Image (cartoon, rainbow, N blue to C red):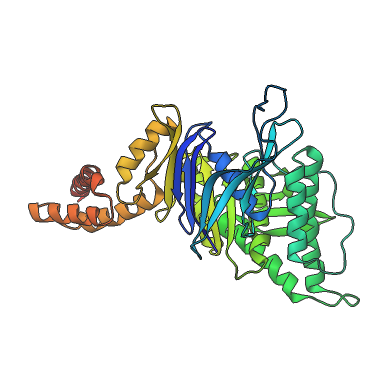
Length: 407
């Protein structure tokens, strides 16, 4: 089950937001205050996360709250597997009249999570001193971690999140191998190795992650440059490990069922090279998860060829509207829009670089004639990169001149 559309009209800063979600990955971008996080918060109610909105209360002539229990529909949500509309509602004032809850009715009860922009690196307190000899279910571990994550981003909460990760991985090793008194549970060893392989395939290649090491109740990341306690790695690596851990657990729950994951500003703590790789790696590693990502980073927005990209932008009335960008067929035009919206230069996407590189290799072997010029133009246009004809032709000519000098 995937969500296919959200429509919100004349609510808060939104004049009209109409977004068709890609079944795999949708990017939402725009300046601060354009409502990206608000949309993610609304969608998080699909898996029963509580979302509060706050308003200036209105009173009648007797200073009584007006419409205290009134429900207000602010938008519509659609699911790809059926034609039913799900209402996005504001429900019930608090006593002060300031607070109302957002709910989606009827709620399809999707499985998923929201990774917020306020994430912080994990915090170390002490080694793991004991481990249960029985196996805890993936759903139990996931819910334990999420409850701590949602409730507490303080040092105490971040310490507990780190302990849950360490405790579980150590438990999988102990129960996976077993001993004369504990029956081996090979499925736990398999999960440990799967998570290890996930990190190998997803963490930046320059880090050179090789394996986990466990010593004296501490969990170490063994890399080509040395060993590091889990909580002592950089903020970016810590964020990635936490990302991957919680997604790994979510994916294990009802593994054949699609899930929804909402990520707010995944670029936090990440170097530019990691920003370009994180979403493609997540999509490749978790094919059953639909991702919706809010970001300010042009490196992330452009990182997936097959995706949907929406800009939340203020119109002349200073209200927010949504605009879909055609990154695939009009990459250069879309980049100009993003540069205007985000206010920073738009770097050429990785997938564009790779496809242009293949085309350049092909034409480096050919003479540049009128015929090959039109062939080059046709090849670029066929993959949506026709606007890059001048740059590509220029690179081919320069490369040919360099090759001629070296002969």
